[in-house]
Structures are given as C-alpha cells and as structure tokens.
Length: 90
Image (cartoon, rainbow, N blue to C red; front, top):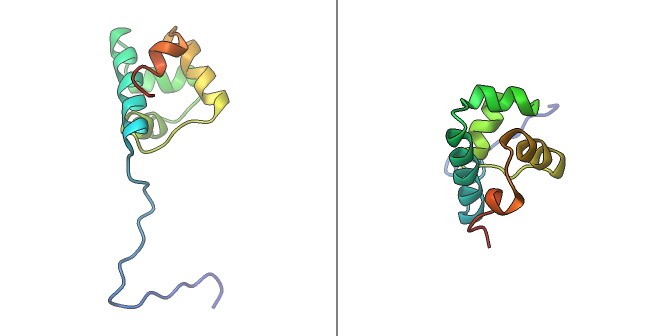
C-alpha cells in the first residue's frame, strides 16, 4: 500500500513531538520571560514575528529550537539582546 506503515502490536508508536532538552527548555523560558516583561501575549509575539501561535507555544515549551531568521525576528520583536535570549544556555 502507498504510505502505509504497519507497527507490530507490541511496539510503541513513535512520538511526533520531540522531548524537551535542558537547553531548549531554558531558551523557551527566556523567550517567555522576555515576552511577559513586555506584557505581550503569545498571540502578539507570534504576529510581530510572522509565526503561528502554536509555534511560539512550542518554543516556550522547549519543544523546538528556531532557525536563525526566526531567532532574529524574535530578538527584534522582544527588543532583546542575544545575551538576554540565550541567558543560562551555555
């Protein structure tokens, strides 16, 4: 069959969501903190960056790490320095 993947009944179905790692979680916490300091909602930040609200939620939850153009858009929208965005991410 086209595109059909069969799983054995005793194998777990793979998760589509990546598990958060420490660095992604810290990055997400930093973004959320900077956003809240500006009294922005996730919707407001998403709109200013040209992102979906769900993607901003995923970033703040530590599920994803953004590509460079998105990082630049976040930095600009938050009026933050790179040090603020990557605080404790070393």
